[in-house]
Length: 142
Image (cartoon, helix red, strand yellow):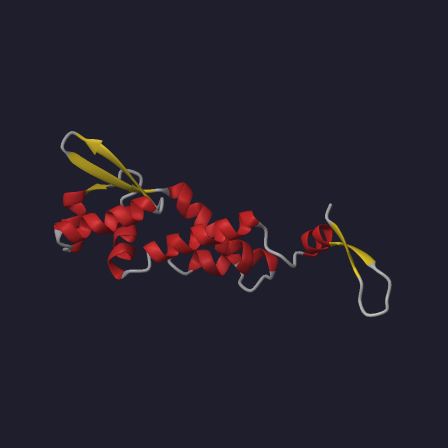
């Protein structure tokens, strides 16, 4: 526990317990929370382009088998070099997984990462402050 004494004007020194106040009052974000927020921001940034969002939608529609690069390219009409860049970005942010099958690369959506990303948003909008009803979220795409 961190204690410091402060003297203000002619008032005697006052001992303050800084850590418990900030920790218990949630006035300072924890390091883990900051890292997690940065991680999710990077993930959202990765799917923030039209092409990468289209790739994610396509991979989700092909779940659990995924698609090889040629199938993704054929479906979306993205040039090979550009597609490779987009897939690398998604893979680096943990949104897709890749496995080699002979001479092909098969990409699948990383469902654990997507679940974590959605839970991050869901926790704030639907549980803590109840800004949205959970059933409205699941009905939006049906």
